[in-house]
Amino acid sequence: MKDNAMQLPKGLNPNEVEHGFALSLMDHLVVPTFVLDMQCRVLFWNRACEHLTGVAAADVIGTMNHWRGFYCEPRPCLADLVVQGRISETHALYYEYTTSSDPHYGLYAENWCVMPNVGTRLYLAINAGPIYNQAGELIAVVETLRDMTLQKEAQLALQKLASQDGLTSVANRRSFDDTLETEWRRTMRDSQPLSLLMVDVDRFKNYNDTYGHQAGDECLKILAKTMSDQMQRASDMVARYGGEEFAVILPNIPFSELLGIAERLRAAVESLSLLFPESTFGHVTVSIGGATVLPSSKGEPGELVANADAALYKAKHAGRNRSIVTELIAPEKKSSSV
Image (cartoon, rainbow, N blue to C red; front, top):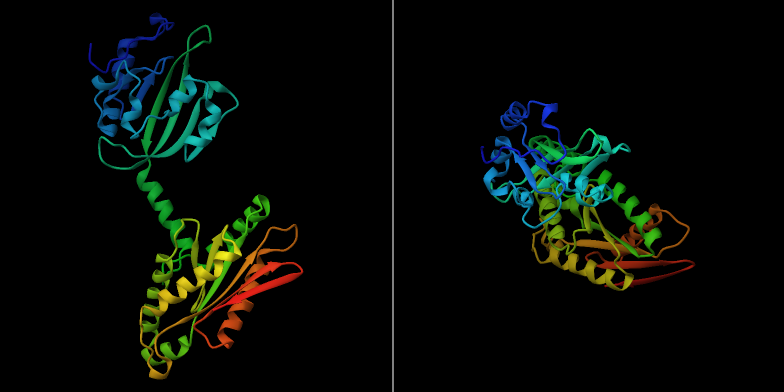
């Protein structure tokens, strides 16, 4: 018998099907397919599955090492969850999934898999279907896989275009609005502070008018990258708010840290030493206004933006190239500036 020929699990009546033909058919399917028994041992691993994973059938049949074809560390595949009755864990293990109230229909999920044996990362659509004997007893689970990487990458690229500023490659205004709304709700729910910085390029019109819009665009690109490089957490977001104004969302950053972050951004821009066309203006600088909101049952995201904008206005009129931040504590407000 071939290495990847499936041994019939105990309980399946061989008179029900011409199993030799069925196994040969499964082995030649273009759909990557494997089958687990009730101990999560591999009963069958077809040629398409060998090609997809880079794992030979002879290396996995009779073992519980099927995960090695998809991941670098042990973790359940979708078929394992069906065998072990752990369907409730699907949401924690898979990127997207659907389940049915009828266990006979099995599971569908999608996930990024690292595919360690072929050296590439793939996005796979996965079906895990239970196999029952005549008595209605679960005796095996068949898992089929479909490579959806190109489709997923195209979807992510479209999503990125929809959320990214075309010039500077940071988040756009729409993405900023959506993220701020999300973080505001999280702040109210989890009783954590939420901070926001509004950043405006000082006298940018002079720069644009003298060097031209193309040079002005290059300046904005440099500033956006410089600010993004200063972000130390994945949850922090730099966005182009409009024109030469940027916004920085800082979840769970208390007021005590806000001025320090603002000053780090301001100093990073100043250290670029981008010359202004008029020597009297020196180098390109930014003014920054910030605000921190503490959880409360009242208020809305617009209040945070308005207070950060008001702080930015103060920074501009206090001489530019400085930071002023405000803490929102009703009915009092505290301000700090540099």
